Image (tube, rainbow, N blue to C red):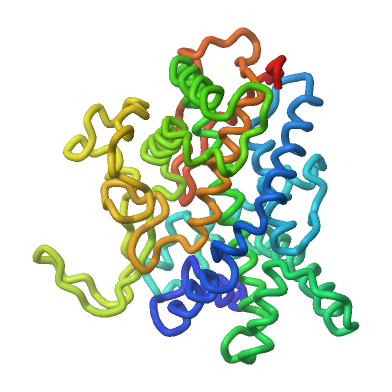
Length: 393
């Protein structure tokens, strides 16, 4: 149990600011999320979109959007990291893995008495560490098996794949385990899988829910894609820069439904702020959800209004503190460059290639739009929708 706690604390999500923390984002930015590497993977992302559409058109019934996007994102990430699918996107194991990751995020984000009364940490009074261990071990085992397989392949002289895993292992071999050891590689990959699949899935599910809830907004997105891309053509990454209204829809989705509603930090020293003293090691939570619904910064803050971002300089890359779904400053999410490409391409592909209708004759105004507040902001009622293939696509 103590080993699990140490592993979580070494994760890039939770690690305290210091030499170790400064190393990990720098490593990801220089080795993994470079523009050259992401550009080189455009064909892979295009293939993943085609595979997703194939599953959509073969379904013939209502599809759970979150499950569809999770499977696609998992397949994309596993091919970028391991050059292979770790699971069949259509298998029941993918649903189980999605539930497992949600369970990890639910338990990690659960208020823990031991955080407020350190004397209780050895006892785990609420059983949070005990409950999280099976879920954490399941994902850890999946990743560890793939790393062990790759280590054996490298030792036997098999030609390297040049994927994310090879990039991290090359760095470890070049600079030694003091710079990056195998446990850190495993943790980085776990962070990529947990953060990448959950955040992308939640963002797209909320975006599709808001568009189905507001049909006139859906019509505007479709019209823009047809005008900029054309009918009968797949959306390519080169097209994304032209889709300004789609970009506004995603910004508005992340404003209303930030995937990480509470940004968690820790005070490294005693700090005085607005007349208050924040002691060293105090856990500090920035309520991003409250900021993006504050009427002092946003007109009609509870209304889904993508138009507010048209001809606006406000972005979600951490420069404007009224919209920080990925964080800001030195602790901004290092996976942001990949996340932006993925969510734009996923949403454009889903909207362009299918008309969507709600199941059982449900009307848009009757949709359940409540969220489930936690470390990750999930839709309380999973979104199901019926795809209708666009005849000229």
